[in-house]
Length: 325
Image (cartoon, rainbow, N blue to C red; front, side, top):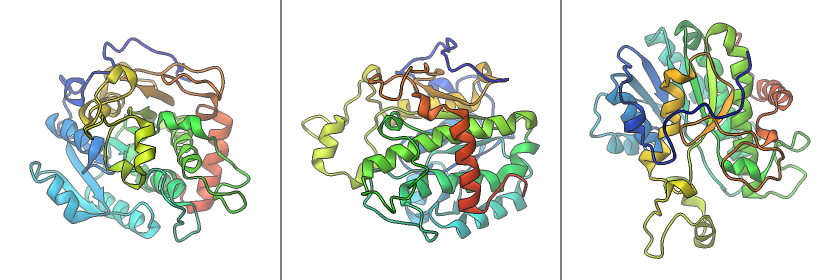
C-alpha cells in the first residue's frame, strides 16, 4: 500500500531535537548503522540511538577522526568503510553480517556536497557515487539482515537541494555536459529520495520500509568544499561566523537537524508507512511542480516511482549489487 505524501500530524515541528524525538523509544537489543555518524547531524543521530539502548555501528572513512569525535560514547562501534571504494563497502557488510543476524535501522547519513569534479574507480561522478551509489550498494549487501529484522527501517538523507536537478539519465556522470557541482549535488539528492521510493516498494512485503529526509540547513563539515561566497549565499552563518539557528526558516542546529532522521527511524506513527520524503519531523507535502519555489515540500522529480524504478535498475548495473544476493 502506498503511503500518501502528506502530513500526518506528528506533534513535532522544525524546532524538535533528536533527544526530544527519541523520548519514550526503547531500542534495547536493536542494531543500528549510521554512515557518517561521527560528525554533524550524524553524530547527534548516533547519540540519540545510543541513548535509547541501541547497539550502534558507525562505518568511517577516517577512523582516527571518528574515534576522537565519539570519545564520549566508547560503546559505539567503529569499522572502516569508504563510500567511494566498492571493495571496502563489501568488506564492511561482510564483517557486519558475520557478527549480527539482524539490522533494525540503517541511516544513510554520510555525504559530500558541491565538490570539484572527481570520479570513483568505476568512473562515476563522486557526489553521485558517494551519496547514492555507495549507499545503494551498502543496502543491497545488508539486505539479508534487514529482512531478518522483521520491521527494519532505512533512512536516506536527501535535501531541499533536490530542487537543483533531477536525474540526467542521458549523461549521469557529466561525460558530455559541463560539470556543475551544484547540479551534481542536486542530482545526488534527488537520487537519495528516489532510492527510498524504490526500496520501500521492494521491501514492503519483507517488512522493510524506507524514508528520505530533508534535515534542514545546518553548518557542518559538509560545507568544507564551498567558497566564502557560496557559504554566504546559503545564509547559514552570521557576520561573526557563528551558525544561524532559525528552524522555521530552515536554519537548524545539528541536534535539530538529526531529529527527522531519528523520527523516521523510530516513530510508531510511521508503522506501516514508507516511501515518503520527510522534513521537520513530518511527512512533507507533495509540491505541484519541479520548478516550485517552496522550501517545505518534495518536488515530483524526487517522488516519481517510474524514475525511482529506472534509477534502481541503473544502480544495479553500475554497482553490480542486487537485493537477491
